[in-house]
Length: 244
Ligand code: SF4
Image (cartoon, rainbow, N blue to C red; front, side, top):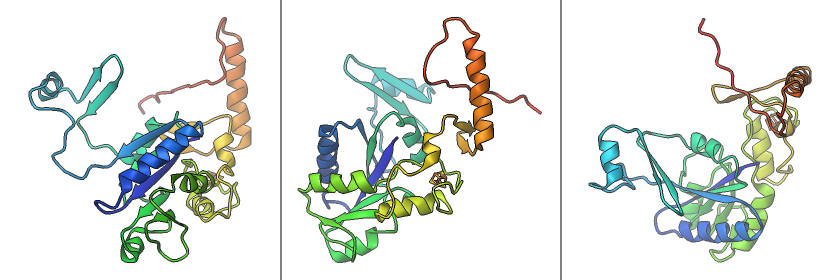
């Protein structure tokens, strides 16, 4: 289950130090960790004018992939939403995001140089503060990555399905998320994340009742058992609807 947390703050507040510390600590604890960095400069490009990859893009390629012996880099020339990037990282355990102060629904760590900054940065999704705090929120120092990771392990919920099915006892995924952040609920308490059948339509998860779940999984199990040599634990089926 992927869990994402954004480390937010103004320039020179020490966000990168917190991200570094958290990544080291979580990797040490055996998690698969990724990071995302928000860059505000409108003209930013990781590509370099005149390089082969730049020439590919200038020729009209919307995506350019560089494959080197030890790294793969993808340059996509389009606007991408944070949710889309996180969906692509679902194989990881934790994603630490640097920036995206205004992203809604993402648990946050506010890194503040003053109480005033902490009050500006912290919202209902803030799990903790570093440096200075808004009243009542847990406070850490920049070099307390271990203690901060302890709290994040408890208080950062996974990316939720967003189907507001209420089976957790809350009216919506947002309410459940806020309960985890506040420490009133366990982070893995969403039953929808453990369901056998996951149906998405155009990338959006659809709620299925237990009868439909059983119907789909039973039908697929039956179909696959009739196919010679087809084995495996996870089935992925994509259906393109006929044009109406
Ligand atoms: S059970 Fe999960 S999917 Fe349903 S409302 Fe609660 S958090 Fe959302």
